[in-house]
Length: 109
Image 1 (cartoon, rainbow, N blue to C red):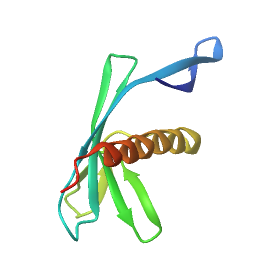
Image 2: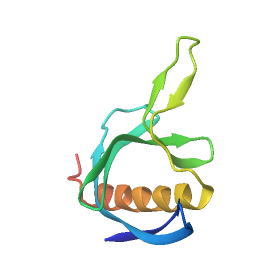
Image 3: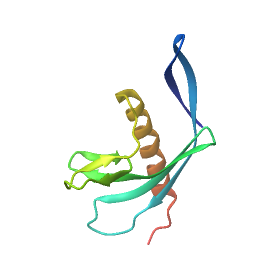
């Protein structure tokens, strides 16, 4: 189980709470010459799921792309995403670790 520190603001000011990433599932994409390596789903606090997080092989290594949709102008806009760099880096690290585990456990062809 993973934990992220969640900072939030209520009427009385800022407070902290722990948000738990309770599950990460990886579906490996088995296509040669494809930059998309896997698709992940993440569950938060056993009550909120984020699907279609992509694991992509870029020029500088693996990275994740949050779920997005194409705008009428042809750009992609995230549907859901972390609001700060620390949270993005933590989620990325967790998903990439689970991807590496899934690769190691996958049957060899």
